[in-house]
Length: 344
Image (spheres, rainbow, N blue to C red):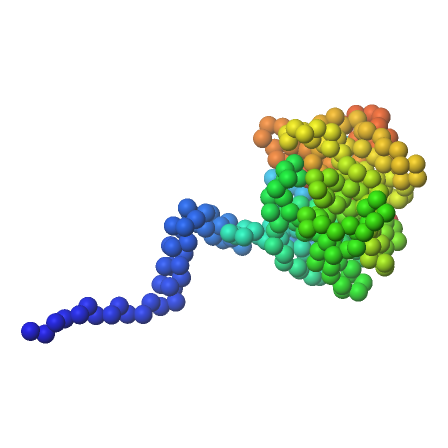
């Protein structure tokens, strides 16, 4: 009697093999891939570039509309001013009069960020994809220097379990520094080396050479002053995060840790770079943002909104007087675009 062995299964076609892989990954990840695939499909079907009529033209306040995820703008007047929609889809946005930087999160098992360089008409000039979650974006006043920060691990500066990657791009030369962690750092007059060094929150001076940023190491944060030509950085003082240089280049706005409470650790301050005197601002709530100067006297920043809104843009005087007011409801990533390129 002849023994009959099972007939070998026919080889799986390409689609069948993909289906098997997806099913296996779904079992391993508890269904999260299904969400990611849905998110990719949904994002891919939406328009992400700016409308042809939407350009950088000031004076105006540009911001990310948290309802649509796209950039909009409105007059520099009160929050009741009508907004103009139609900008690119971005998770973080910053601009000068000559160009803009749009950070766009891409969903996936391992999240990625697209750093998209835009011209004055908000048309794409260059796109760089990096691993991580977008968190900070800055363009120098001339539009030449760009910087962005992503969370490589973790998603909050309020915890110690995060890692960042901060890049600088020179549009004139095309040179990209993928991570400024390579910059020689001096703390207390001596060269400093440590494996836990993290940088974030770059802000550029008018000369496109000097910049300021935050460095974190050994549980402490420092304000550093960097030099592009010398490729060096030195720590100026402790407990400074997310610096933002004023249009006249004389002061830095920053968030300062004032509490170990993870829900409300920071207050906004302004540092006079000549006297190194700090001034607390009238905003008493915790601000986890890199504030933007609307002019030499006013700062704008994002705060969680009321009634379920994701974020509102608030403003406050830079000299410690006055009181905060809402500038944009349902907005984030504010930046003033002037008739001349003086934004930070």
